[in-house]
Length: 176
Image 1 (spheres, rainbow, N blue to C red):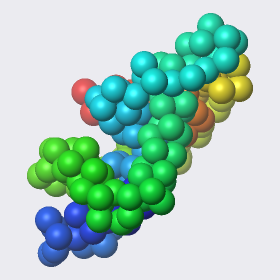
Image 2: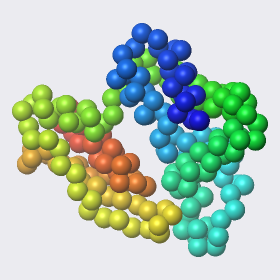
Image 3: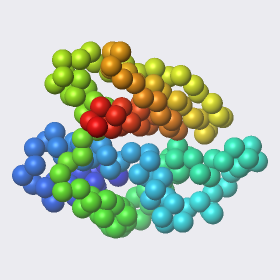
């Protein structure tokens, strides 16, 4: 439901944009992290019912947990109220984010890959250097390197999030 409505909104707002750019916009808007931000903004956290261990582990602040909860809430809203009310909710919650970028954002991993190719360097290599935390609120540390030229590390609540953050950190180093 979320992907459908955001895709509709993007197509309406950017009718002349190429498919690849629309796809980058969509991918940036439907992440677990964005869903978690929306969940926080609409006040979901105080309504979570978590077990003691999950509470103790900070699951109420986990992007993974909140992102999943937001997706579930959208699904329930659709099933209970129908497509139009669900569409209206999603548009209200996501429209400002959709309008925030004049140009399609480039995913940091793609941008790093393109940087390496443009500079005749080896492709970026990602390595998980640490995984900690409970299963419902994991923390990953990932290191990315471009040959022996440079490397950067970052943390995230998923491997993908940590890789993305590491790529962004390395790009920042390389573009200075």
